[in-house]
Image 1 (cartoon, rainbow, N blue to C red):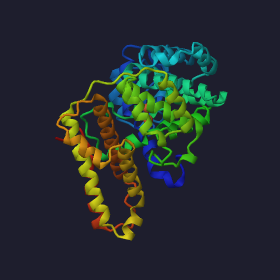
Image 2: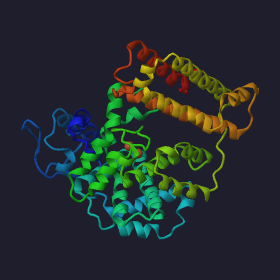
Image 3: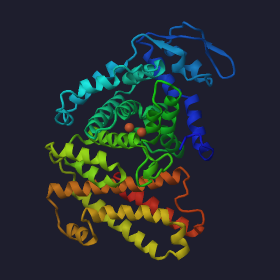
Image 4: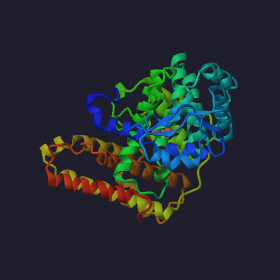
Length: 441
Ligand SMILES: [Fe+2]
Ligand SMILES: [Fe+2]
């Protein structure tokens, strides 16, 4: 599926508009230019023909207002030249250095010739100048984001080499890993702040970033098409719960699947380090990700000694577990009131809620066990506390994903569902999101 297909016009148009008005990158590049030499390598024009900056001008912060006051004829990075841009060789070295700087990754990288293999795969790739400039700026402007890309690249290489992917697949995957979140560089980083409440418009931007990234890469002949496709599909999941297109497993390419696994693991490692939570999270999500890549990952972690994390607050955990129990009790009551036609209309939503309920059962948290745990005045067992904590986090994520789909106006309730039933289901979902949320007491 291509992003500019007829039926995807609306979401693709948002990506195109986002690219044309990339104020975030204009801010980043003009700030960066205050300390690094960046020159206009051609006249920079607005879409309506106004010359904004002449060829040869040294860029600085003072040009920001002028540049964002207009829609630019071309993405800004195509009109600029930087003297010390990152190249592929340097990227490989940075990736390797980053992986060894993260203590939880070091034990997994015992393969000493990994660096040589990465150099062999990537060293001769000529990065298109606009992309090299982008990476150089992002490295300084958003170091955590840059680190995420490098760790993802290292993990994807370890997985793909162990799974014997072909040389073409390895090259496509390595590039896709480094560039996978390029589309996020168009989004104001504030929306990722933990306390920020995401608006409907921000949700749509967030869910469009794989398409924006695809569009940024697709135009360069040096970048394999498989790389651009993998970036487009890196948030698609085998059970169809991903985005932007909710593709079923068989429509997600192999390189995309490996990227998705590496990206998921990289996010977990950045968040938790390699403690026992990560193995649980991987296991709980195994049906959403590529089986072969997950098997390699499980083997990697099996060889790694992961410690237990510090126990979360037991009283808060117990309160949240009670809430989860209540959410599913309310769902059962609601579900009993559905007519056969309702069940038909809302089958997708029911399937998703059922899979969340399955998480509880897979973890052994049936109602009897929840009651048993709650009847103890203090759990005291750090392993059980960790399990409950992860379970609650996963359920909260599941509810929020569903809510995110509503925000993106995806017909998850089905178009033929009666309004009164739709309102009750939506009300339940809103409460589920709030109750599962950490911040609500
Ligand atoms: Fe990512
Ligand atoms: Fe992403």
